[in-house]
Image 1 (cartoon, one colour):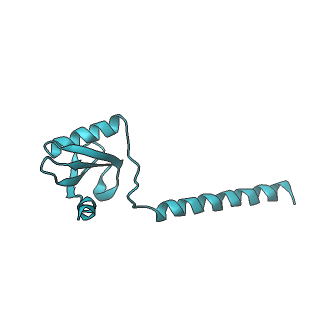
Image 2: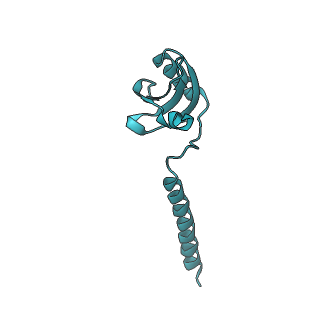
Length: 107
């Protein structure tokens, strides 16, 4: 087997492994184990979300793409309601939605 054939075969094997991993990542897409984000951007997203909800407690910050958002901050408001605050790349409000998953788990 020539060196070139071995390189092509090895490259193809790497692509298959990478594609399989990507397939698992896509298939696993929306689960409850989304990775929380930390750092200056997450801090700004938290501040913006708490301003939008007039206070409360930020439970988590994640990168998001739903409804054109960049950030998703889960906030438990002072009245006990949990909402997802979605923000764009400028930390402006895109949408605030009731966090039905949290409500479903408590029932």
